[in-house]
Length: 303
Length: 155
Image (tube, helix red, strand yellow):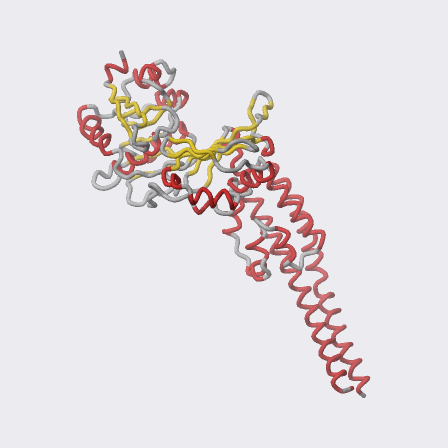
């Protein structure tokens, strides 16, 4: 499995980004810690690295921005129709590109935006930090597996805090050597395991499955001992309650606090149902890519 | 000098005939392979919504690779089409198709664009296949006629 870590600017973008911008990004000292590129048509573009925001040296001309967008879509916008409708698309290698543009609605349903109306892109650069989830692995093995079987962990935090990176490492540690927990990973956005395979891991990757359907298929057919799911929404939480599994679930969710989680219609009910033995708040430490855990005891969450 | 000239005429006539016959065969084969490529594109896009680079990577065609069309078409269609012996109409249609696919946000739109070109390609391929023996014969006849003419002059 490839090590992403603090890698240089990906060569996959050569020929897609304008040459001078690619050269600038390649030379940028902070590129190894790059987390996000925010690119605007005719506007300011920025690079976020280790929590800092840097301005890109040049503005994008409209035609240049169109070429970049088409290049990132690999000349096949139709292949990302459903994702574009949800405001993002994927670039091979686990890159998620958020798309902001004029919405097209028909019969109250949002359609994929017209490419020429896309005004900005938010390119998330995935990272792999082997071993970063070690404290959570220990916590899960000590508590989740022993005294509270069938219960999992909910990792919450604001966007960009590193929930996906942490979940990926948790999966690699739990389903890899030496534990080999048989896991089912619902990777609907292809961000956890973009290779769609998991060599060395005792894990089934449900790539591109909608979360609810993926969870149901995994529970019914793959006989996992652990479920992992990124960005669980309220709708999917309710669906999970309907399906019922008795399996521990490790999931991530967007939330600012345990209190906020508790008041969410789906996730709150999942917490009330005792599906998680703890909720763990994530926030960025001063070191940039470090994680700070704030374990919330069930009593606090359910109070 | 006269002898050399006649020899040149003979060779040019026969060579030209053979070349024309081979080009007719190549044009037919390239058109048929293009149709096969369009059929694959249609199927993969309609069924799997697969991106173009993946479809092209899975398509193998020695005929279209030899002329340099395959590696270049998805990214530089104009250059790719210049390398083929496809008819002007089909080339224009393929160029239009590559532009249409760039703007298609739905698989239905992409499939409709491919179908239009596919229909045209199928018709052309059928016509070329039917007329191939006649075109091959004409080309060879022209070559042999040139040779005979040269022989007569030499006589």
